[in-house]
Every structure is written in C-alpha cells, then in structure tokens.
Length: 469
Image (cartoon, rainbow, N blue to C red; front, side, top):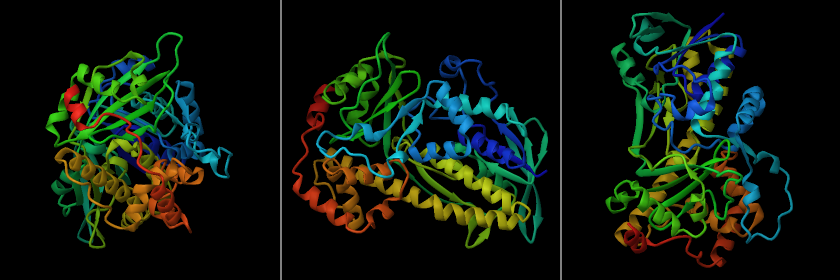
C-alpha cells in the first residue's frame, strides 16, 4: 500500500488525507501543534491552541465551489458540518432590490453553500480524519528535516525526520503547512535548488469582531453585499455556525490614520456610520477587535525551468499559494487542490518525476488562474484605497477585461443575469476571464454600467471616518 506523509493537520491537509486514504493510500499526518482535538465545539472555539494557523480566529467562508467538492467527494463530512451547526447560505437570496426579474435560472442550484467559523470547520475535519481508516494523525509532530536520496542529480524525498528524532518514510510528502510553510528552507537544507516564488504584500489590515445572536434572536439580514467597498475601507460580513457571524473592517496597510480601528469604540463608531451594515453589531459580542496584517499574496513552484528541483514532494493549498483572505477563497482553493492531488496520486505516484511534473501542470492549468485573478483584484482595491487616502483620482483599469470586471458589480445590481455572472466569479464557479469572454457579456456590462448613474453613498467618506476616529 503506497504511503503518503501529509505535513500539516489543517482543513486542507486533512481533506487531502481523507481523500487519499479512501483511494487506497496509507496516510500519516504530522501536525506541528500538539493540542488534541477538543471534545466539544465550544472548546474548539474558546480553548483550542492552534498557533500554526494565523487566521484561526479570523473571518472564514466556504465558497460554493468548495461546497461542491464536499457534495461530490466528502458528503459525510458535509453532513457532519451541517450537524455541527453550519450555516446554509445562498447569495441569490440577497439579490439587490433594484433587480425586478427574480425568476429562477438554469444553474441556480450551483450557488448555495454551507459555511462556518474556521475552528468549527477544522474541528469537523479533524474528527473525521481521526476516525478515518488509513489515516494516522500525529499531533506535536513538527518536522526538522527531509530524508532524501539523489536520483539523476535531483534530490528525491523519501520521508521526514521529526524534532523528536523519529524518521517517517513515505512514497510522497505533501506540504500542507499553510502560509507559514518552511518547505523552501527544508528543501535547501536537503540540497535542492531554490523554490520559484512570487510574493507581494496584499496590502491590507483586518479588524474583525465575532457576534452571536441574542437569546431568541436570529443573525442579521443582508442589506448590502457581504463584501462592500467604501471609499477608504471595506466592510466584510460573513455568516457563521450556530447563529454566529463576523464583521470585518479592513483598510490599506499604509493608512496609518485609520489604524485606530483596532480600538472597540472607534470600530463601533465607524460601523454605526454605515447605514446598511450598522445592524450587524446588534448581537452578543464574542470577541473584541481582532487585528491581522502582514498578509502575503504568494505562489510557489517546485518545477523550475521545466525540471523539478526535487521529487517525492508536492505543495498543497496555502503552502503552494495563499491570497488575501477577504475574498474567502483559501479553503475552497485547497479543497479543489486536494481533489486533484488524489487524482494525480492515483495515476502517477509510481513515477516520482512524473508525479511532480503532472502535479505542477495541473496546478498551473486549474488553480493558478484563480490566484492571478485574486491578486489582480487585490491590486485594484489597493490602488483605489491609496487614491482615496491621497486625494488623487483612481487610476483607470489597465485593460478592457479589467474595465468589464470593475463595472460588473454595478451592472449586476440592475440585471439578474449579470448578477449571477458576478456571483459565479465570487463563488469560484467560473474564472473571470471565462465570464468576460461570454458572447455579448462585456458589451452589456459596459452599457448598463454606463447608464446606471453614481451609486448612493454606502458609508462615511474619509473626512467623516477621521472625525469618528
């Protein structure tokens, strides 16, 4: 039976482990954090020590494309997530009132999802993995080094050595160590060439609070899009499990004047000045303001100039590429990646160079376009925030496709089919370039957006925010 080592016991590493085990592999998961899986969901939220996951108590959302993976590959895990209190959410139900035609369309069944706070999602996956035959989860198993041989001048990874001195052998090592993965260092120490890396600061700081519905109450209803850009900040409102939700105000990381949002009173004052979002504070606060910055948009490749720098190892999910979390795509990308890993291991594991090359090609074809689209959106939002901060005119979109994508939210607020097109991108169901290339769509977007007129203010302008702070 082929042996696979998965480094990292987060959601995506565990999802890959379950899929691989169900496909006939013997899987060992080495998770650095030693804390066991809590007995209860409440303990998972309040007491689970997950220092290796920077975003453990930050906003989380599972996009519809991620829900589809659960439906098709892990329906038992999906059912366990629902049983744990996950929220069912369908963005079509918050179609703007400016759209008169609300008749259903073919394909609407793709849009619903189930979602939960990150600790809840990880708790469900952890319990599923530990109960899965063929998966051995070892917590407190930090890796110190890779075990390697050399084949045709290229290091071949045959296993790992943990900090306790244990050697674990495997036919494939999967790096699922997330944003903080140390794989480039481990490969360099094993004699491999440098990993190809593209990285830039996403340029945002997040200020988040979690709430729960008060006794007898219900979570707030949407009066605006879950992600709503304001002139000098954005508001992100996400449903969670068990009548909880999160509210995030995020700013450009260079905007020192707005960093006062880390204080509860300032945060509350700014949210209260957003008429379509103020009601999201009408709940029992579960946290103070949780700040997170230094988020990097990064992508790595282990194939450089057409050749693997090492064989016997691949990078998965956030260890491969990580992006701005406000778009809620990380776990969805990871689930899509994990399913593809199962397929690649099924057909190519016996040929190590082929495994790495096919994995790289599949990743570049299927996932990298999403990373590039996310980074392009990050850059556009950063430019808009910086223009507001400096009082300059926002730069125009760099090309026609970018202009169409920039106009799509405005046009989608007036047209039911364009609204769905916008959701298909947001939910990771269809790539932006595929949507823009649909016959007649670009022309219709620009026509409707051009006649829509300016949007009414959704919240305070910069001067008003500064006064509130």
